Length: 248
Length: 263
Image (tube, rainbow over all chains, first blue to last red; front, side, top):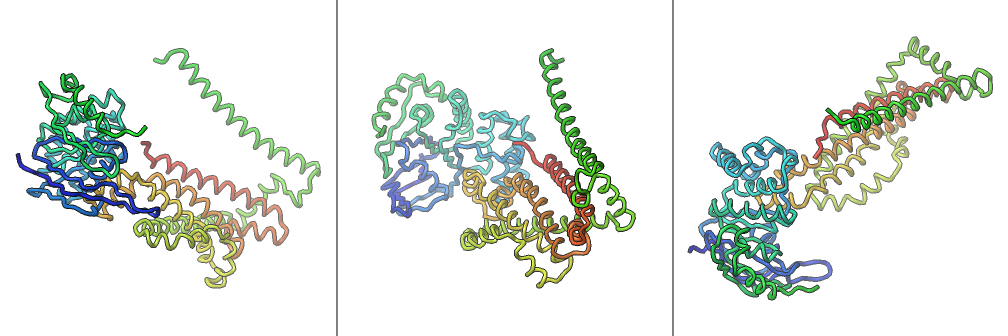
């Protein structure tokens, strides 16, 4: 498989009046094409910071980040962040508008995505008339609109209630697989990570560094909800849970 | 078809509304009636308190001789001009301060001082610098309303949802794009509310300005009346002002209802 992203010895220091905080230290990893990687770790370990750095929202202090084959990224946040004064279609076109790529072909591409993933009847609706799950799907299509190679998902389902969360993670997973994207997903939910990821990176508490990497091999691997029934699920859950330093 | 209970509920809402309205009408009639009766029986000195009939007579008199509507329109004209200028200038300055956090931090204490100083105190300087004319009144009103506009609009800009700002940045948006596609539209409701405050602020400014320097306007009527000890004219001016300001408030209020979209 092709390496699509390569991070080496990443270090991030935050500066505040009170002093400096070493948030991430010596973080290295490779992402391969088509792979779904999940990063888990105790809260405050810098897992979201890694995504912010990857999409250029924050600078790094040391280390290198290499995107191979000019691969581009799309960022999806915990909040759907849909603009309530724009229709669903207009919301999904936001990225293209910003990049000045509002061509007829691109518009058609977004329209096709909306149609394929069940939002075709809602393109002229405003976000307020959509359910939480549909809004999250619209947010995903907005991210897909600019055709990124790598998707960065930052706790994408945390704002949803548990039932919706299961359904939406299934939904999002299927869309991502169908579109053949590589994914880095940050989550604090171990079962969510096991049910979706091919590989799980466990971070230590601050400064965040790689504690261990697990290849998730489930028998009868299918959708996230089905994966939760796999017999290896409990084994991985126990393994990873014990590795994360929870300070209660 | 609604259930019986629901029809009862709707009826109760309607009856409550009628009761409140009738009490409101009753109170104003009671007030005017009492005022007139006390005046008729000489229980109050109409030279200082005037009376509803005298107010009415003064209004008619003003209308016949002295161009009542000229005074009203002068005040409205001055208010509309200073309101529009304050809105425009306020939004532009707020935009600059949002755009450049450095300028914003430098100017912050000055804005606070300008906001807290009673602008009437600047009246004499304005008259000397600009002269005893309409533009002085407009500058006076502008000073009173523009600072409040800047502070309110800037507050709205700065309250833009931070995760939406992150989204724009992650999509590679320029500051220009972030402002026009996110910050400005998301502060829309906030700006409209700022305008509502602005209308009353401008009217306060205009009346204050007319007190200091004018030959026309409702403020002039009140001031002139008090100088010649014609309390009929003073109270008539106040009544007209109350009506004008209520009408202006409701116009903005209805515009607000029409424009503000509910989330």
